[in-house]
Image (cartoon, rainbow, N blue to C red):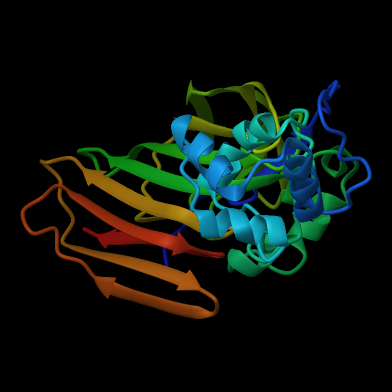
Length: 319
């Protein structure tokens, strides 16, 4: 099988803690998110209905049942929309910025990414362990410090059957204050052609240090425009282009270490050079399936999944 180049297949984090002065109701004596929320609402003499209405007034609709679950401890905010509502919720109940957010249980199911080795076949055992124990890599391992929300990969194929570029759009939500970037690991299959890839920032980030990590994997630092507060989201876009030689691979895919709200691969072919056959595939929870997909008169092939991962998905083609 041809190579799969996995962009963002291990986004590990560089953290910089921010100092913060919290005002309002203290939550230092509360050990859980639910207890702190309940205490703050009691101090404010605020009802669930009133909190729901005031959140809706500022553009963050949260149902009465959801707020009740949060206060009782049956659930915690996990989805992107819930996390984005937390700063307003903290303001409305009179606690300092981040006081409730920092109490979230970041070990909840679905938040912890799967290891690189389990998701990317053909790399051999313990590749991620090797990276983690290299002195230069120990400082960037921090897989639970961000939630991955969206991953779009768009691949452009030229008239000479070459890969012109692969553009990536990703959305993250910070699980800790001070997250100021990610380190992505980009690498081909072990049998892929030897082509050097250069990353270029498009928006929301800048390209930092790049270095060889292990077995053909390149680690590149992507710096956000500014450090994030906990529960704050960020969208970044960057592209990978061949720096030398022709990239003639006929399969591209992405890897999701966490469950994503949306994952999509879109391969766009030059109208003067369309493939004879195309396929899409996914691999999730040990189940792999691929099927032929007809271009049906178009010049592009895309595959989209919602609520996807951990796993991988992609597209391949033959000339």
